[in-house]
Length: 248
Image (cartoon, rainbow, N blue to C red; front, side, top):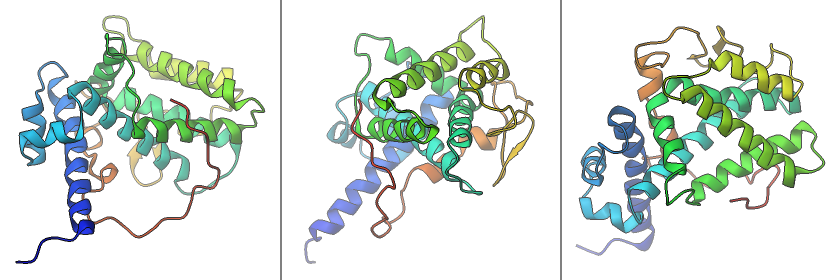
């Protein structure tokens, strides 16, 4: 049997890493961070346990990378859904709704993520976070900012503060109230984005109805497979329309 080509090996590594990222989101969503081991994640991904350490320095780095992937792909999906638009206010509204939607629909995962950022290890830069930063920077630029370098960190801080407030144990703020404050800050009409009680094109609900875990239905909270490319990689994609600087 002839040895595998470098391109085949690279594809196998890519798919293994994607499975680990997806498994991390799924298991932490179900059990919480502390109750999740690297072995649990490897078992869910169908990978050898030693492979986790090959790709990630530790559990915190893996989980942060996985959540940042979920965040950046959720945001990307929201910004680019039909009808496509370049309107800066609509894109800002979609961005706010996408991030608040994660707090609403995946409370366990996002609470663990926010708690992890406050630990001694703190924020761990990774490629997934840089992609998220590029999308938010682009959103600020399209909104009309002439000072993206200062306005992007402010948007990031406001979104993180809103997510924290929505998930604060014992004293959570309603997502609708947080949305109203952010829309007021950015002077956005309530009807932009995905107002509470409406449906996102493609079937992702923004309903006020919640289940016992604080989400909007088991399928929305658990089906993350579309955000993790475990199938063969597609061909070269078009370059981004507005590249942004690397902001960690």
